[in-house]
Image 1: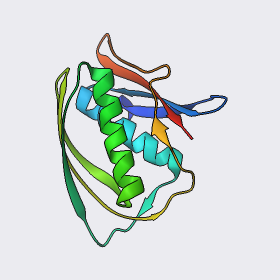
Image 2: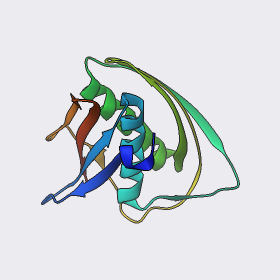
Image 3: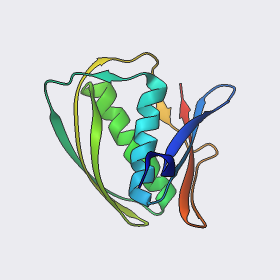
Length: 137
């Protein structure tokens, strides 16, 4: 997989922030969504101290799973002041297991309040996964 196989881009939105995300596998789509969310916020972390967390989620569908995953790491960003840059993810349509490693938060440029359901989608388009996620700011 090359860097061009996956990515994200900001979507113009009147009151919130939104991302379009694409990747060849569901796991890399979730990882790219997290990277994009941190990028929108301008998250910066320490490189010296490493922190690990594990997430196990089960939801009714892939879109709910993505919202749950992003909401969990957003909670840790706000409550524990930690962000992640290493993602080991295993996904199915309704279950996610994630082992995350990152660092303590140094700064955030812009705060995200929540991951929303507005215009949410996670779809397999031919050979690539695509998603749209909107954040309340």
